[in-house]
Image (cartoon, rainbow, N blue to C red; front, side):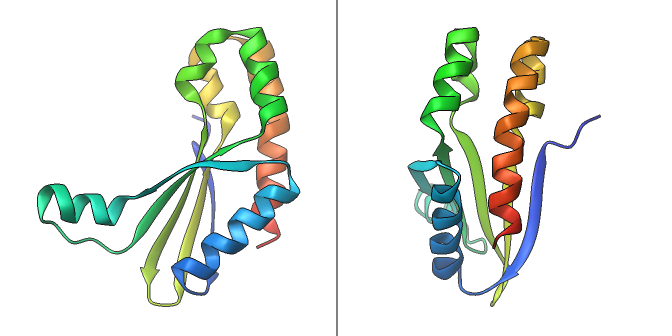
Length: 129
């Protein structure tokens, strides 16, 4: 089975790493469309506390358009999720969903191959942190 995500542990605060991730993604032409502070939602909705974790919805408009043009069902898999999670103070996990793994569920080999371009861009962003 193919890995669902790429991950790396980096040093810094959650806020610092989110800034670095956002800048690295911008270099690869991904913008942030959404932000979910999951730890806040767990606290608000359930009264449960977890270490800080933020889910960013990242999108490269050109790649998303090409994928959508190929198969409109791809919209259920957009945007690409980027998870920034505190492991312990000063140690942050950055996890990026692999578009090629997600596209595999659609059973469209050409779409999965197109998603490998997004994989490469996301991997480059991750390696630059």
